[in-house]
Every structure is written in structure tokens, then in C-alpha cells.
Length: 216
Picture 1 (cartoon, rainbow, N blue to C red):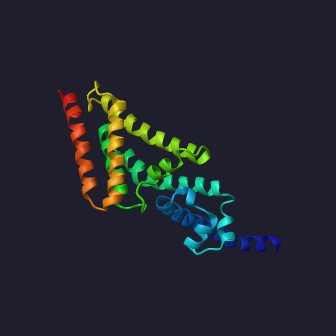
Picture 2: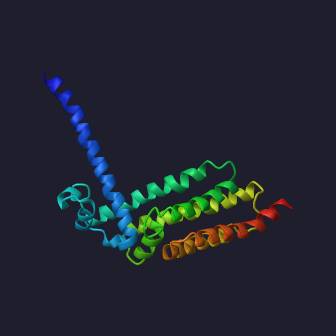
Picture 3: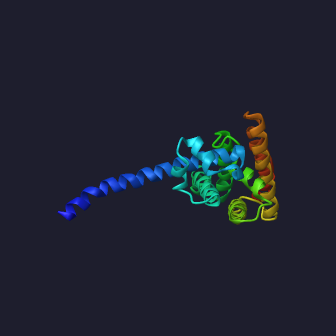
């Protein structure tokens, strides 16, 4: 009899666990959106409770501290960025194609207004730059991972003969990052397609000579 009672309780326990996961996901989705508008330091249990229509105790059950909430928000934003930008680019058959996809998907991520305040990481890293701690450390690590992905694609393209081997890979990566960051700022201000399209052209203009040189 006790076994049957336990078995009957299992679906209910799984359902409660599933509901908890969905609640946590909804909270973190709202937290990431708010962070790009009000700042990641502006996140609090009370502010999120109001935003998602939950009690403070309901939100607190998922996150024991403000720092834990901030770190979880960063991880949620990272997961979304990976799905929209990193993973699609990984399927490119060539390194140059991967580089172009990383850039192109980043611009799509901006234009889709994934977050109302633009790129989550651009705004959060600027905000937390002078605030040492686990949140800043995680943001810095994620930025370095992004930069390394871009530079890795450039270097792989050089090895494949698609980009001039004489090109300074670190400098090219810096220039690509710079134009992407400007696209983020200008798109947030203008809410128009022009900055995105100008950025696509700027990237093409920067890559064209080094791609041409590799073919000669």
C-alpha cells in the first residue's frame, strides 16, 4: 500500500517541480529585460515580485540573495544569447562563414529587440565595471569568451586561406567588436534599421580587402 501511495504522489511532485522551473524561468526572463533598462544593480526581490505579479516570498524562494539573483540573471541572458547567436553560427561549414554568422546573428539579436535596452552584456558590463565581485567577474569572462570566439574564427579563416594571413587577427577582431558595440548604441537610440544595415555594410567593407588579398 505504501508503494502505491508513493507512486501516486510522484506525478504531483514532478508537476510542482516543473511549475517551479517555469516560475524561475519567468522571473529570470523579466529580470534580464529589466536589467537592460533599469540596470542589473536595480534588480531586487521586491522589484521583480511586482514585475511578475508574485509575492516577495515566492521570488525569494528561488533566489536567496540579490547577488544570487544577479548571477542567475546573467546566466539566463547567456543561455538566450547562445541560442540566438552562438549555436547557429557553429553550424557554418567554413571559418569565414562562422565569423560572418556570429556578426550577423548578433545584429539580428539587436534588431529583434531581444531585450528593450539592447545587448544585455554591453549594458551590464559597463554598469558593473567598477564594482568588483562575482557578477562583474562572470560578465568579464563572458565578454572574453565572445571576443575569443570572434578572434578564433578570424584565425581559423586565415588557416583555411579565406583571410589574408598577414592580417592582424587581434586588430581585426577589435574593429569588428567596435562596430558591433556602436550598432548596439545607435539602434537603442534610433530604434530604426539604419544602424544595423550600416553595420552590415561596414563589416563587409572591412572584410572585403583581406578576403581578396587571401585569394591573390
